Length: 156
Length: 162
Image (cartoon, rainbow over the protein chains, first blue to last red):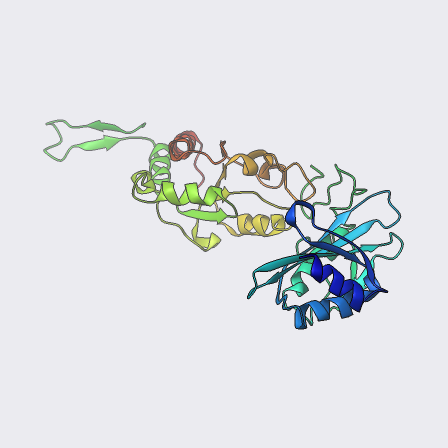
């Protein structure tokens, strides 16, 4: 499975950062500016036609604080690949994949809601789980554990 | 029950009943609970179980779910209530006509349960009055029946408004 790492490294040397297969899970880390070309290549030429999951990790305290994680699946070959990008704290912005995989639309809204990562060219980037009046992004590590924002009733 | 049945030969074969009006209205009300099920989470499975044939809420006159709050007099809040849906729950409660009662069904509804987080209301009694708390995660149907009987007792023994 390391040949896919080699192919990506050869095709996109400027975007490739690192790769590993820990516990049998093939993972590549790429630069965020290369997300669209790399993902387009993986979908159209490597056959990863399903976006299984799209989520985010908050590495609070690190300079590249947010890590957006994409889980891809190849329905015909039954292969999986995990793609990651790291985003800086001051500018948590990455390109939207909603025009490539339709389901990315809601995943990206969830990541925006929970982590405050912005997705460029997203058709409808608004909160999906929390209500519009909610302030902040609750899954960020610096969101206060006891902070409550009820719409009715007391601060319980 | 508060209803005394006296049958004597003096007044013929039919007999008669003496009671207080309050007691009789309470007796009528406690056996005609129209339930509005506000079901949001896994406790709903237990609610289905308790309202179907095995446990049979109909024995308590509380079988008929009304999906309009205007026709219901028992609000059964079944499952976790998030801050997002709390205003909806409050509006449903406000739309119900008097007399009305509320049952908090399950630990999440009573106290928030283990969801002590940004999203969850820590017990619905912070936003509306609750008559009976049924704990459990989820409560067994027997516990729910016990709660229904507690509510019936409460209805019977309270002062009736009419």
